[in-house]
Every structure is written in structure tokens, then in C-alpha cells.
Image (cartoon, rainbow, N blue to C red; front, side, top):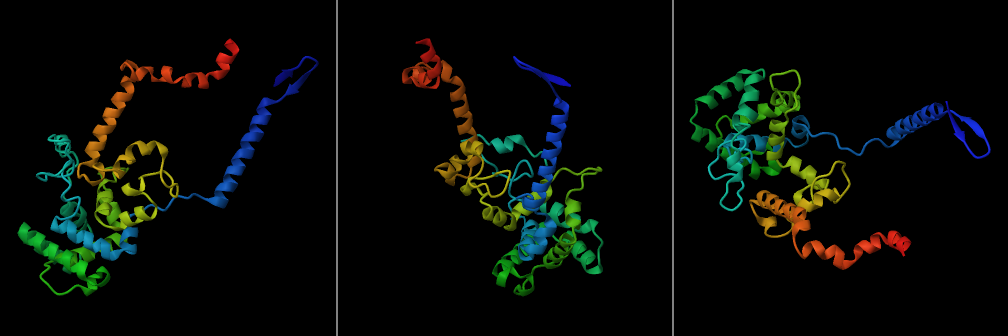
Length: 306
């Protein structure tokens, strides 16, 4: 129990009671408003939702993984060894210097491995055995032919692909689609050998190799040429603190460079050093004093001094 004193009287004041009432009122208001307006967040995109919403894109991406032509397959460090891959800063191969720290073989990790771990019918077991017995060049050629045929099929429909020598690719990709639709692929790619799973690298790479995830990002104004990421959907053009970085992606030569990430990192590092060095640069450090802006900001102080 606290008391509030004035020049004329003293009266009791229950601070704890007021705090409890305010807490209960705010909590109740929060619950009501959350129930009415909900959250603007979109539902998470999973491999299962991708397979259900865009089966053609899922199968085409699976074929690209088997062909070794997907973005993940050609990414280089830190996922795989690809000669010449990775961003550079001039002659400095920064990405390759980091080395392969999260080894990923897209064909094995995204397609063959999950299918091997899943229940197998005779057709799938035969297809897997045939795939393993084939030479790597033959596997890639057949998968690439199937991916090309899918791109020419009406609406990318695998049922309308022109006849050709595709080997086991149609069976493998169709079974992977079934596995993904049932939710089994999400669990398989998240397996880390422990009770908790928090490494989403593989499912995210697989998703990013297709066009479905990029289409969702474009619809929410989240792509690089739309100023990039945000925590909540619908807050275009993004968060102000990110503009320092995303601005550079909109202008040449960064806009068209294949090494944009490395170049922008170096640019921001140089600008940060310049900002930190301002107090030590003659002339530049005197601009605030010459401009007199400080007098406008502290005008009340100088008025009292006068």
C-alpha cells in the first residue's frame, strides 16, 4: 500500500491493485483483438503444400535434381564442389574459400535417399535398382531429357509428356510426388538423427530450386528487385533498416552482376569503416560545426544561455 502526498492532504493509493486491473484489461483486450483480426502471416510453405499446389513444378524440379542442372546442384560451396562456382570479389574466390561445410548431393539427398527410405512397391524398387546400376552420364542425360520434355508439355503436365528415352526418371519423380503429398518428404529431409529438428537447409534448397516459392515471394513483394525481405507480409517496400543493403541491388553494376552479394558486402564494409572514421578525417569531421545544425538541434540550450 503506497501513499500519495500533496501540500494539503494524504490519501491511500493501492498501486498493486491498479497494476493487476491494468494487466487483466490489457490481456483481455489482446485476446479479443487477436481473435477478431488474427495474424497477417501467411501459412508456411512446405514440400507437401508445394506438391499439392504445383505438381508440375515439383516433378520438373525433381527431374532437374536428378539431371544435376538445378540451382543447388551447381551452387558450389558451402554445399558441393563445383569448379568455378561461387561469388568472387575481384580475383578473390570468397565463397570457395569458405569450403564445403554442409555437403549436399541434390539427386541423392532430395530424391533417391527419401525414396529408398520410404515403403517401396515393386515398380519403385526396380526403378531404384536400375537407376543405381546406370552410369552417371546416362542418368543425367535421361533426367535432363525428361526435364526438357516436361517444359514443352501442356501446362507442364507429366501425363502429356512426349515419348522419349527418360529411363527411370518418370517413375522416380512420380513416386517422390506421392511421398511429398503425403507429408513424408518433409519429415525425411528434416531428419537429423535427434529428437528435435531445426535444420531446414535441405527442404529450403529443394523448394528454392523450383519456381513455386519464387512465385509466392513475387506475389508478396519479397524479391530482390522489389526491395526484399520483411517480418510481416504486406509491409511493402520492406523494412527501413534493410534499405541500406537492398538499395544496391537496384542499381548497376550490382543489379546485373553475378557477384552482387560479394560486391555489396564489400561496399557496405567500406562505408561502415568510413562512417566510423569520420571523427578522424580532417575537413569531413568539421562539417557539423561549419553547418551550424547543432545550434538548431540545441536551440533551447543556447536560448537559455543568452
